[in-house]
Amino acid sequence: MPDVLVPLSGWYARHARDLPWRRPGFPAWGTLVSEVMLQQTQAARVAVEIDAWLARWPDPAALAAAPSADVLRAWGNLGYPRRALRLQDAARAIVERHGGEVPADVDALLALPGVGDYTARAVAVFHHGVRAPVVDTNVRRVVARLVHGVADQGPPKRRDLVDVERLLPDDPGEAAVVSAALMELGALVCTARSPDCDACPLADSCAWLAAGRPDNAPPRRAPQPRFEGSDRQARGRVMAALRASDDALPPASVRALWHDPAQLERAVASLISDGLAVRCDDGLRLP
Ligand code: SF4
Image 1 (cartoon, rainbow, N blue to C red):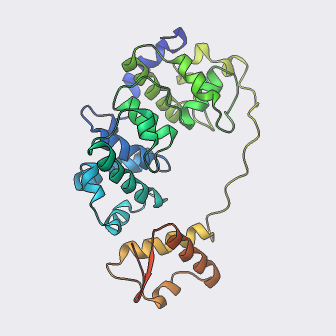
Image 2: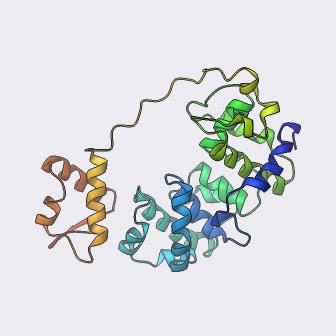
Image 3: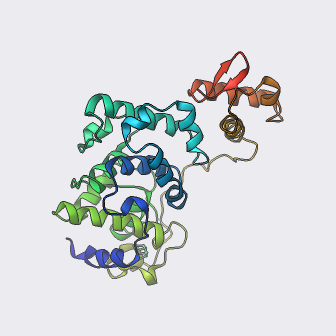
């Protein structure tokens, strides 16, 4: 292991959060499901949901056979519900292509619907013990500060993988621990807004700290549009009503969900186009 990271493993052993997907024996399928949930949802919320999800659909075959409406209802408030349908598509692909077993190979994982570069690497590394860089936002920020002396990482770059690859020990098991530890350090200590350098095990080697924590981050991307009153909020309102109803929502009930008819129509049309809702004789329902 590079000298710079030697203090990290001990810190991780003392400070890592007890999250379900880190427990010994957690299944490959559970790792895939949790990583898809973690793509856009905070770890604390995923930790609350994951056990119930896996109790209901303990393997890819079970999720592949489930009615999509049940899957969307169970996704509940995790947000971005297209992920639920993509996860079900991935489960079906695992059954068809891999006999129901989650593959270990990064390329085979990448070929699954809804599985991007980070998720594929996370499953391969954290469950199957493959030696490969796993780079999420937290890791990118830690490496930007530690190695490059830059306050934040800017847009994702291919270079991130090369940077992290260079930091990994040769042993795959140790490399997986280092990847998890970098992630945890970014989540708990080297945070975006208020890094706690006094508590950081890497402080003696950190280029950004040594440079006096300069304000040298690349320009940020444009801020996200406001959620309140947005099309996204209207979509969420309709999805919540669909999930809460066992039957189709009559047109009058749909109209009552949102104050702006044009915006509501856009929201409904986008849900239909994303496969999250279908029109029927009685109104609107889950697929
Ligand atoms: S010393 Fe500070 S900036 Fe550097 S890695 Fe640690 S927490 Fe991040």
